[in-house]
Length: 311
Image 1: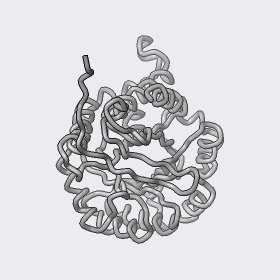
Image 2: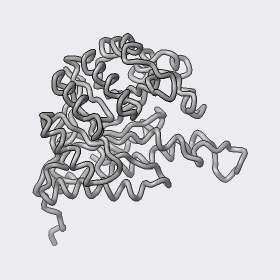
Image 3: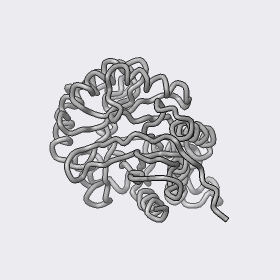
């Protein structure tokens, strides 16, 4: 008896980030993630390591420990992620520009951005603070400094897509369209970016995700609907790769941060946190993620093995 297989009519757009031999391609699939028995999956999902431009004071000790010797230097941090932990791409979190924190200006951080884009040769994602106005100036500067590097910038939202999108167009970068976990809002922002003139192969979707036990069910269902719309319902306005910044959600939750002496049944904090991050990443990959951002290098090993085993 012949196996029952879905017949897909759509295709997720393929997007390149980076340049040269180390650039990555995401998307391009004609079926759901890991369903190569039903269609084509030309590009496997990619893990992006998280790097901050300032010392992350709220990180738990288990996440700080792998980077303790480089935590004060983003460039050294990035290089260690590559040389010791095998990172294939990096998300540079520009936390120092947060108006509610250090409030550094775009010009304040320009020197470190210049160093990173000049000395790091793997694909780079630059992530602002989510402050609409501040991200405009910061991400426009990143676009200029990273000219010719084909980086990805975000979050690009409905209130600043014109300004940031115009810079991305001018310098030929990829934009990460970020919306609250809602399929209609995601589609609308994609339409706005396309109407602005952002090329179809320069858009990635950030659906805004939850962590295991904290909204993962709703996240999964919306991401799955995104993929069904793009692959089975012919909605090409949702047929873009998915970028999931999950690390920030996982490592702030109570179960991950609770010390071991509170309840012995919780187990060791390090192992608990890594498993929460790995399980969250696994679920998002199954839901359709093309890029998952992780914090702990041991999580990366687990997810890399999963991706290889699922080929």
